[in-house]
Amino acid sequence: MDVNEFRKYGREMVDYIADYIENIRERTVVHGVQPGYMKELLPDEAPQKGENFSDIMKDIEKIIMPGITHWHSPNFHGYFAAGNSFPSILGDMLSDAIGCIGFSWATSPACTELEVITTDWLGRMIGLPKEFLHSDHGPGGGVIQSTASETVFLCMLAARNKIVNQIKAKNPHMDEMEIIAKLVGYTSDQANSSVPRSGMLGAVRMVKLQTDNTFSLNGVTLREAIEEDKKNGFIPFFLCASLGTTGTCAFDDLETLGPICKEHGIWLHVDAAYAGSAFVCPEFRKYMKGIEYAETLSTNPHKWMLIAFDCSVMWIKNSSYLVDAFNVDPIYLRHENEGRVPDYRHWQIPLGRRFRSLKLWFTLRAYGVEGIQQYIRRHCELAKEFERLILDDGRFEVVAETVMGLVCFKLKGDTILSEKLLEEIMATGKIYIIPAIVRDLYFLRLAICAERTTSEDIRRSFEVIKRATDRVMSMHFVIEGKHKPTIDIDISPLRLHGSCDEDEETSGTNGNHIGDVSPLR
Ligand SMILES: *Cc1c(COP(=O)(O)O)cnc(C)c1O
Image (cartoon, rainbow, N blue to C red):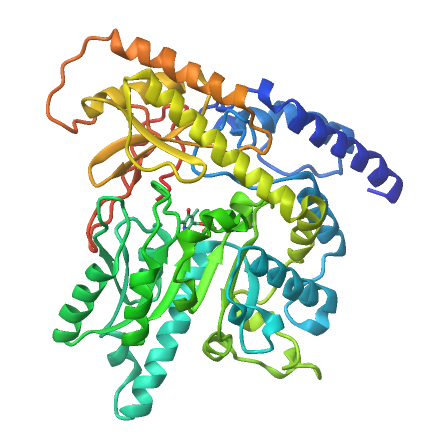
């Protein structure tokens, strides 16, 4: 492709994208294809000779779009919001064009420096203590990672390294593996699946502690676990607390957890992947009380701050724990300004890194703090509006407090009713929602996801649910046993109950066309 063709097709692509977003409501939000659909449409081998780009453009609607779930449709209510916005798309375009691999400051100073500045901006926007900011001139600061999952793994490894070094300093005869075998990390039974997984990957015990009836973990439970484990010769070293759990958007009680972590020298990591963005609004900061006890914290602007995947921001109070854990530093990677600016390659697992701060910068500037606040508040209001519709109907109950942009609800009565309801809803293809199971309670989650969702959209989504409910109520079926799996829709529920050693990927894949949604917990 030469530069003139690029100009031509670049403009066409931007127009295509603008039309796509502008008219996204008109598309069926749920894809309508069967597994393997694409194999029928494409040849087995790449073309020998280059093709005309206009032919490639034509295939987007024919081959790609039928297999797309439209995450940015106002009719999409699954999981959580997936960020996106026009400034973010433009930021990624420029980032791809510059195409630098910014593993050290010297490889493109702007890439590191903009990340330092924008992670500070974001940290201030959400009210973080200054120890988490680069501008504090201490060892703290922010960094953009790909995902919150990677971040929890990274922080767990840094914590592991710290405790191993501490213990070895006092007991030089002890072997590293011997120490690691005694470590125990904690999280709650509502934590995202990435937390127990990080224990598996890092070969340390990760115990899920029981939450209270609001799905929140508190200090009493943590203290009991620590005392019991210490008695048995284990070494508690890490806690991953959640602000805004994936299942119900519940908040762990940092104010009681934090001081206990401090007392026992436990590294507190806070996973605020979704809810962290809401702290831009001061009225939500009451949910982050106790944040000053955290060593590390992460939030995903690629969830709820209008930034396209991937952009997960992590802050650390003392980056030397990360750098010490991962610094290998061969000579060809060194440069003369080392130490004055972060070399982000030591703050992450990969060596290469994209220029992701561009989309963050574009978006924060284009919206301003007020624009982002407005967006968050509107989502929260729409969730409240949906909750009111659900409660006014009389046939539903809400199973967790609606704090942000998520409503968790079920039909009153037996589980099978809500299972049937989901089946009926998804069969319409009009809206997309997913179920979850928290401690044996099956319910449906409706998240406000699209940037331009309106009140009217919410009322329309509710109408779909209401009509599906009418149909379920007119059905006759026998209820045998409480949790008999009676539906063959195979959107796997988010399964959020369970104890520490249970692993429960319950994907019921049966080839149903709706069903290739992998379980997200
Ligand atoms: C979505 C989510 C995650 C995982 O985020 P990724 O960036 O996709 O790894 C982790 N924790 C919570 C609470 C989440 O909601």
